[in-house]
Image 1: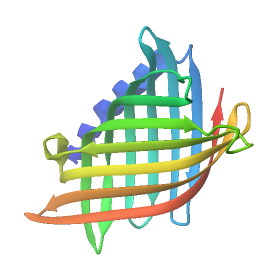
Image 2: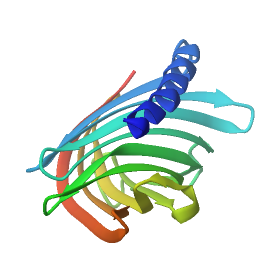
Image 3: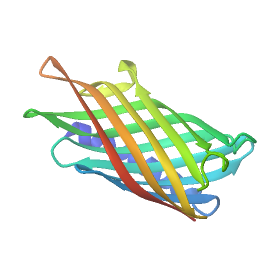
Amino acid sequence: MRSKTMMIGPVIVLVLFVSSIAFAGTHLIELNASQSTIEGGYDHKMPVEYGFLTAGIGALYSEDDYKIANAKFTLGDGISSAGLRFNLGFKGVLGNVEEDGREADLMAVGFLFSGSFTIPETIMPLPVDLSLTLTMAPEPLCFVDSDRYMDFRVSFDFRIVKNAAIILGYRHIETRLEQDQENWETEDGTLFIGYQLKF
């Protein structure tokens, strides 16, 4: 019960922050699905003095394995002449993990790196971005039952029209948890397909 109460505060702060900047910038909504998981997210990107600030919330659901919500803040540059974009920031995750009859609460704040590369038209006639996201939370930044957290995602984003894209990707999650003085680890990797809308 205490861990669930601790989760409410960061979520409220994020919602208020996103609401306060929601009148400017770019909105991005994404929905992904695989055989066993569903993922949804909302990002808000706005220009600042040194690049772009992105605030986002999301959720990842697997009925038998995990239920994870996340919130992130990143700062990045715009697109370069080479078609590269980079973002650095933080991502908070909270949720519940299950495996082999064991269940534990997850809470962590990880370092977030993301980048994308627009594949040149000479290589790919369709407008396609190659995107990469990595989050790592070492033990000092893990709380409740979690000792370590990492997620990794890579995708091809096919921009079928100006403001929308079809996504084909791979996601991998690893967690190390401690419960009843016993350490156990769980990991999951899956291919997914999704849709992304910007406005």
